[in-house]
Image (cartoon, protein in one colour):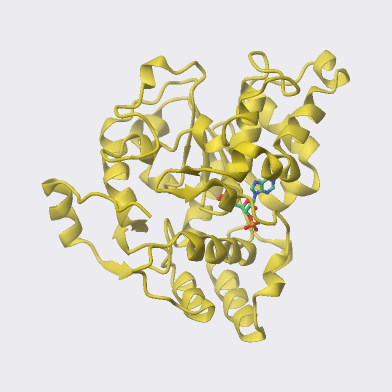
Length: 326
Ligand code: A3P
């Protein structure tokens, strides 16, 4: 795995003042603006906050890591660009993983980002520009909050999100990272210590904003998207002010988008089966099982009790709940 280059002097100073934890996902996590930021993302987050200028027609896919970001990026890209690219013919998703088509804002602005060109050619992007982020709502740049740009957020039940993260980060972590058991990792996760965590704060930030400004933030759940993807693809298109026409519906455009972005299709594409992105992360790791409820294969009764109680406490009174966690 490639090492990340050291931070600049300004960031070094910032890091020295922040609470720090040895991550179970990355070398270090820093408590920055109330969330645990992976050390190798902090420069990008900081620089994004200072420099990103949102446009009114920008669209941002937001998600807590391992909640379905790769899928929602693919769906949103296909919905927004369906006039340029037919979902059933020579589509960019057949030759690029969705992470290459929809860049993370915190990566674009990272001075040593390995995935995208530096500086990222923002001014050459076709409009509406489509970005993604793992950054919690309160830490988004003011220009995102103050402009009319739209945010589509996806969350996932914490049991499956934790397991997905546990498997993923065990595959990609540097060899030098201390091995934690799944129980020890869950302890940290329940204390909120994980990249972009606490998970509940992340979900609640976007949840509250979606209720306060429903035209600005659309709040989706991975489980609901899986259960009725047709309904939510139409919902996303309406939210983004590009509803499907009757003609598109009768021509099967919605079904073609769903099929193109489906787990089986994406997982089996050559482009997603081989090669790496970002810090030498194997693309195939983004497509594991894509199921609801795989957590039962990992959780002991004590772990179920621990996470159930934590979720109950953290989400109580918010109106946000998950079927699969009871
Ligand atoms: P599992 O590890 O449970 O299989 P993210 O994209 O935020 O990193 O989330 C990764 C999770 O989304 C993984 O879950 C992955 O398998 C699943 N996933 C990836 N592509 C998907 C798709 N097209 N449809 C449904 N789930 C998908």
